[in-house]
Image (cartoon, rainbow, N blue to C red; front, side):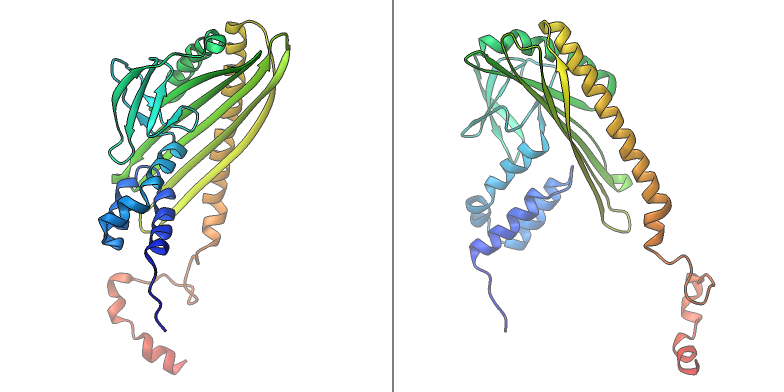
Length: 285
């Protein structure tokens, strides 16, 4: 017995498709979802929030006026009502989550207590990104509450190669919270890699890791350098582990998923497949 889906059920399925779109393939997934729903009113009414969730989760980079650096769209710099702020240029802006364009810029007043710490870390992180990520972007956010300061970094790097049937994105977020007079604190990181390979198939690699390190607190510059030293070491180790695991999968796991030869132990000449009398051979077996 056929069951007709309600508009809300259709929208719920569409939202899941949108939020799980592979890196670099959001437009393709959106166009497919739009075709499946065949109702632009339902798209605008029910799944537009999924665009925002996707962009914030993926740390989508966007160009900022009067800046050579891109700003990332994240939960950390979300002001609500579609507005975000760029701590580097001290501007807020309206972000169109479908077109991925920034507009309507206004001045942003940074948090005074954390700003010197944020600036020192931003400089060190920017140098690190230039050195390690060819297509990378980053932002550093500073906040304070009484005598407590929180610094958060967001890193994004991607490479899209649709002509070679793959796209990939690296994301990492590091944060620490400390109070005046404190000598050590935890540096907490979350790293995520997502790769989609779609030549003659559809394979996604999604890998993530949570990392916690203890950091010694000194002045702003020395502490910033120590933070980047730990980030560099942790991300290099993680990237190496992913590469080694991927090579292991290529050499063993993937090969185990397919038969090297058919049960006849002979390779099939696919150019002559029509000449094989498979039916009669099975009948006479």
